[in-house]
Length: 253
Image (cartoon, rainbow, N blue to C red):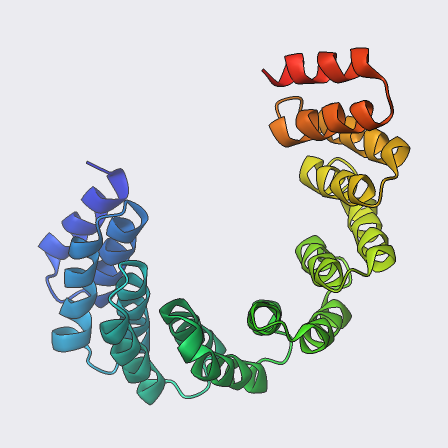
């Protein structure tokens, strides 16, 4: 048995109405993927010990969302909002559920993400998720606008820079793709995935010399990155360096 679970259970044995102990036990079950047990702990608080606990209702929403019981998740989050009108995280979580439900619910998702941003304008994940929805709907300029706002909040966010590069890729604006990947690499010069992505861009625009350099940098950081070995092999083929290409594929194998 998990030590944290055991500890929480002992607290509950000493005091069966210890709200924090029930919430902590729910958290421990959730962390161990014991979702049914987690739900029962949070319900113990939300339905019996403290019906006004926004934390318990929010956590219930989280577990229901994770188990794809979306309607119960939405109901729980809305209960949490009833008792905590100014908690940006709950609005964000509610937006995330609607996003998970599918494209036909994107409007509701954006609405709740924007509500989270009204409360917390620097909520980076909310800006990112709105941008992802715009990108999924091929509204690339709107997505770019969100990412630019996110970068004003955190200019050193590599995941925002990578996502920004992805939108420019959709627009086939390869100069800006390369520019943003390079900004990300200034922040994380040993990030193998970014080097690999940059290599793929150079490969796509037929600049095999630069592609090879990028794939090699990726493999310096992660020698087991199969995509980089494969990209390196292809780049060597188009550079007519067949021996190097064979070596790359052999390493991949």
